[in-house]
Length: 113
Image (tube, rainbow, N blue to C red; front, side, top):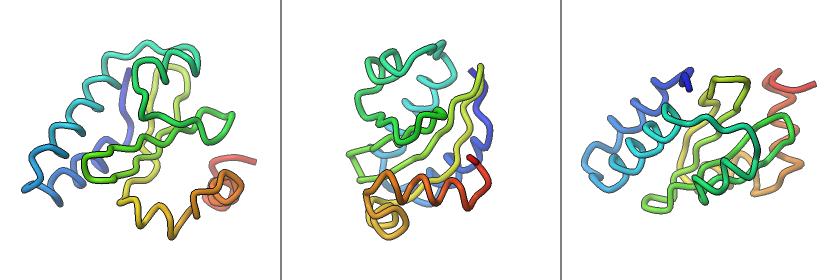
């Protein structure tokens, strides 16, 4: 699978370069995405239990527990696009842990209708 906006993950790694465990977790996510051939929600969640489908148009949050880092990715055909990255606190401030708020944010970003 091709990863679009992979630079967001690489910037996050650079920002927290002293956190070896988080860097390894991000590397693992990148490898999983590049090697993935997921067709269903169940396949994604089976391979990545940290994935949570937050919108039926293929948007998933990945919760990297090591550093409470959240990564929003949308899957379309054979592409994974990194939409948002941040700490869990950033996630709470932006999305309030609420799927309706996430949907509104996606709509404001022009990512859904």
